[in-house]
Length: 187
Image (cartoon, rainbow, N blue to C red; front, side, top):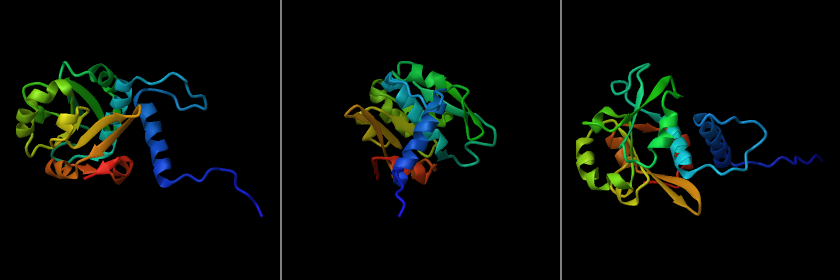
């Protein structure tokens, strides 16, 4: 009788490891055998999650043509903007990420990252985005509870996310089942 000492990983654990490898790739971190003991700043970790949300999201052909850039937007005062800037020019499924500060129209974005300072403008932005194919991501509790596709949060020093499928369907976005399996909740 042989005994296999290797751990048996669940599908969720394997998916999480794959996502973490993609996080490292998004941040330009090597995936060698040695792991740094230095903690990753929360903003960088959230930016890496945003990168992976783009990896596991499919936009309709008319919204994101072959080779077109994925326009990632955030307000100039967004706390994540410096970390998101590291994603500029990264490749996602054949599309380069083009980071932009949110301008006159949020509809020009493919991914819109919202934070606490966007709270007072969220109602207006949400009305503007009605029917637009924009993946909305927020780490602000008030905005997250009010119709964004993906809500990021930190609990017990761990970043997690929840998915609102109604908002995703309204934006005509197809979220990968791999992404949905990693979510804390899918509603």
